[in-house]
Amino acid sequence: SVHMGRHCWALIGPVPGDGAGPPAPERVLFPPTFSVSEIKNKQRRHFMFLRWKQQQRKEKLALKKKRRKEREALGDKAPPKAVPKTIENQRVYDETTVDPNDEEVAFDEATDEFAPYFNRQTVPKILITTSDRPRGRTVRFCEQLATVIPNSHVYYRRGLALKRIIPQCIARDFTDLIVINEDRKIPNGLVLSHLPDGPTAHFRMSSVRLRKEIKRKGKEPTEHVPEVILNNFTTRLGHSIGRMFAALFPHNPQFIGRQVATFHNQRDYIFFRFHRYIFKSEKKVGIQELGPRFTLKLRSLQKGTFDSKFGEYEWIHKRREMDRSRRKFHL
Amino acid sequence: MHSDDVVWSMLGNRQFCSYKMTTKTQNFCRNEYNLTGLCNRSSCPLANSQYATVREEKGRCYLYMKTIERAAFPRRLWERVLLSKNYEKALEEIDENLIYWPRFIRHKCKQRFTKITQYLIRIRKLTLKRQRKLVPLRRKIERRENRREEKALIAAQLDNAIEKELLERLKQDTYGDIYNFPIHAFDKALQQQEAESESESDAEREEEDEDDEDVDKREFVEAEDSELSDFEDMDKLETSSEEEQEEEEEVEKKASHSKWKGKTPLKGPARRKRPYIEIEYEEETEPSTKTKTA
Image (tube, rainbow over all chains, first blue to last red; front, side, top):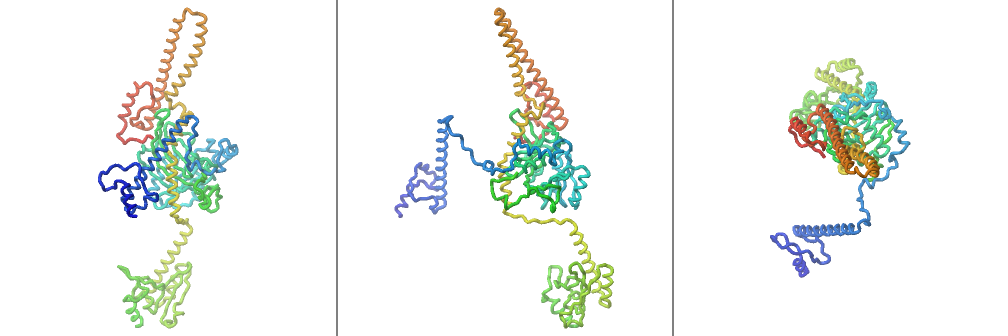
């Protein structure tokens, strides 16, 4: 009733537009079925909502303080801190996760296509090329990639079929082939093929940043052989992809150069970064980003060299089956 | 023949023809039997009772002819002749079939036939080459993947991960002797010294038990020794680290100038020699923006 309404107003306190009113009262009396959303006036409703929010925050802070006091009071007997749930924590356990001491995996790796590289029998030599008619951005990206990866050469594809390029590459002693696919003037795909009949991986490439677009970058990468960091490649599939990436770089990093190329896998996205590091002290290192950066997402892994029709696929990303769960990752 | 003129004046000249398409500069004729594709008095198939065209079907070219005798029979109006696959022979066939026909139609027929053969050749060449397959992007999926990539990037904390990995590699001594941090070396020296002092203290206890008179002397000697050894070790440390560092820095200087950019040098002890090198580097450095360090 109207009487009730007036009663409410009197208790609510200063309303915005009253100028400098007294500060809001600590304890506010509301009729039991009142809710902030019922006020029709937007300004007043907003004001009430802000006040309610402040109250909530205060309560939360008070609760936190209380908990902390309790924890301190208990001292050693306090229960362990609750670890927040993250996607990495909740990840569905993949049965193909590699155990570091697994003998079968070690045996496989000693006899797969990368064994000659890891035994230092072959020196990586890489051919970088693009799809037909590359536009400026892709060309510049290829050049920068060639500076990052030692012993690599960029050749332009002039309408040649990949199947014809591959035997020629093998004849000229190339160990790896990188094809950068382009769409609408930006690179969007990467095909990495290990040459003497090695596996072929097809990636979707995104967030490509050339050197000039990187903020606070350093000078150009030098000719020193960089180190390689491979993070988070846990499953069998991840392991084979990690070895593919490692096989791109020569096995003898020159620490004088202080350059490091990182392939970091997080939730099936592989982030590539190229840094120069400097050890300021024993516990502190500074890194400076040079070089291009991009992210890759694996689309398919094929056993032989590039053959889209008749190849034997080890792994294809099937959207309907594999994207069902948000906690399941494959790399 | 005058019906042609009537037809043209009614349809072609004005806008009544449904096949006529007008643009700013030109009029086109959409009739499939049109020879040139333009809307003209001489190329309108409706306004010419004697007309011929060349059309291709499934890769083969045909010559279509229309004569005034068959004007009353729409079903039999257009007579079709298959042209040979050989270019020159086909031209001769056109000439032969259109003998005594107006020059314009003969000429245009041959021109059209030439154009058609050219584009057929091109089609055959292109089908042999690789064709780009256009795969449509699904917007929802693209958006989902972009969003997930952003979140994965935030979760990855790349800088921290890289720094951690590098520090671990340093701890595990993969860099060998390049980085010789004072804490490391100092620890080693301390350990050595402790080992020495332990053995010495054992010996001292034995001696003390034997001779109590020469306690002071021995203590004095001991203290001197330890101080000296300390100092020597420190010196050795300094010089060795300095030498190595100088060598290393010289090499770095040669390899790439001004990587230091006036940052504070690494080594702790023997700061007296540092400023000398710092100044050198500062002279070499170019004025540049601050570099990202962490």
